[in-house]
Length: 113
Image 1 (cartoon, rainbow, N blue to C red):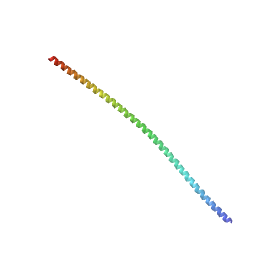
Image 2: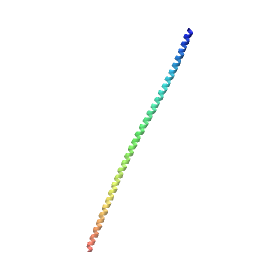
Image 3: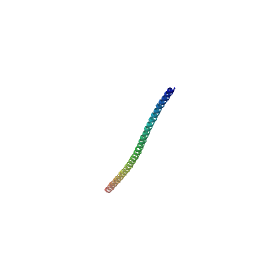
Image 4: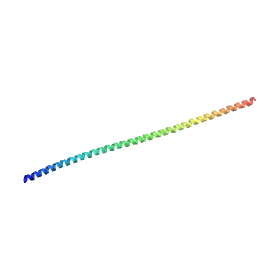
């Protein structure tokens, strides 16, 4: 009977050892997965920060370009207004000179008669 008790005890110890080894292996694998998840989270956070920095940089650059375009458009508009004013002044002075020339011709025609 002692042999049977010893065999049962040995089998129980063998089962417990295998159970302990299995549970230890599962815990180690679980800890490895947790470490991998933490590494992935860290990588994700780093990528998110890099993306945010890039987005902010691009938004600033886009705003600067929009401001530059707006400034160029305003400058072009002022240049166009100045050119139009010059054209109007030239047209007005040419018209006035033309009237003076016609008036002089009319005076000469009156004198000749």
